[in-house]
Image (cartoon, rainbow, N blue to C red; front, side, top):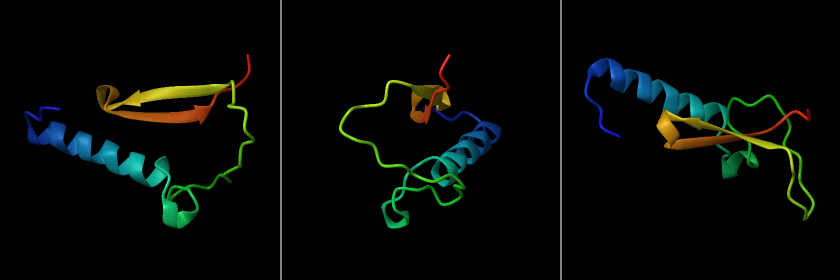
Length: 70
């Protein structure tokens, strides 16, 4: 990613810090993000069918959440 202005750098860094603190799993915290309020549930051997993916920073970061059933 090419950063061309101080404003863009600030937006990118804020988004990355938000991702690391709210979504990215941390091993020392039992795969929870530092600012998470939700519980982590272990999955069995079958992969879940309802996973949604959200691209951040133009696809540099991917965040996954359980999608709601339609």
